[in-house]
Image (cartoon, rainbow, N blue to C red; front, side, top):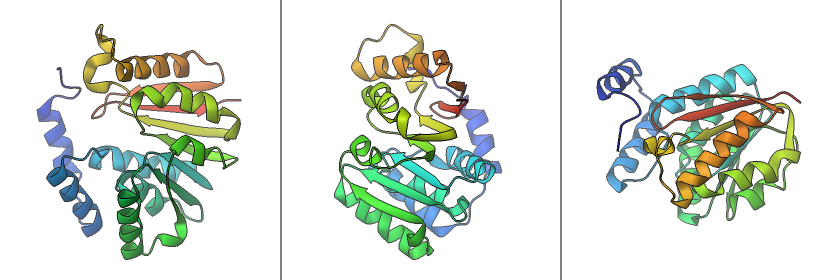
Length: 208
């Protein structure tokens, strides 16, 4: 399977992106040891930067895992709140522990269960982050469109899906990502771009 970023470029970017936050390093170590998917540091820094620029009041994550991406959001969010969701209670419990150590618990709300179902209970979402099972992406964005605030940002991880989007793969996750990308780029309500960073990050601005 083709890589999205040349390994030499990825190594160069990682060397530039030095990190001394012990909780970030702890989560990265745990992810490596358990082969658990996280957005990793390069995308985490992007999320931090976008949050600083957007200054959202409400960030809703679909699929928080250990809380790695949510941690980057929470460090940048100011007076807003981050909603974490994950199917696994153990993941949410670990995220709560991390946020407690960082003194960020008041900036977050932790929920175990169906991500889209939980997110549907929130209105005026300023930033929606999608990182659930890939075949769920199209249904998730269509379901939550009415919940987005004016000028909301939608950010989705894994939108190049290890390069499978360029081939003839017919598995449901690849088809889900391709349908999602086509929907976001073809929808006049959004201005979308897709960054070839790690496994692809789609960023869309809600125009209307």
